[in-house]
View 1 (cartoon, protein in one colour):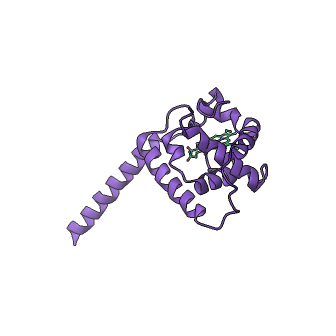
View 2 (cartoon, protein in one colour; view 1 turned 120 degrees about the vertical axis):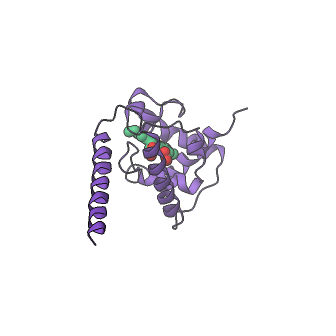
View 3 (cartoon, rainbow, N blue to C red; view 1 turned 90 degrees about the horizontal axis):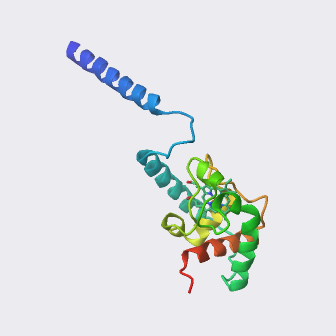
Length: 158
Ligand code: HEC
């Protein structure tokens, strides 16, 4: 009985110390790179939430023709280049200063998303990051054009 109580107290103390150390590592600064554990956990949760939303009914996707990509490129210049860079591949200094930093749209982490997932990322944004939701700025059709433009960045140009 007494031993149980001592163990419980010790266990509680250990948990408090661990929480205290974790809290002391935490701060509001956006200057450093997010650490590996934070990136891993946040990415897993984000991908799960994005894929769940992308399974809901979405407006029909127009064919990914050259005209759609060209339209997307036009929208891109006005709405996205401030952070993702003119070419979509080289984030601007502002984009890099965000926490988490802005990714290259040609990177594997972005190209791994399906078209439907890219649609919900662009339409609704990623909360608690610099990635805004564009639902009130672009029509659904324009968002599909943006998806096709982003996708074209991952394809090797000939
Ligand atoms: C104010 C800066 C900013 C603007 C403007 C912006 N983005 Fe982003 N974007 C980000 C950041 C930061 C991330 C990384 C979010 C994360 O790590 O979860 C991101 C991520 C993304 C992703 C990948 C999602 C992921 O899981 O990382 C896509 C796709 C994307 N943006 C497309 C766009 C498009 C298309 C536009 C324009 C319509 C746009 N972004 C405008 C900052 C921006």
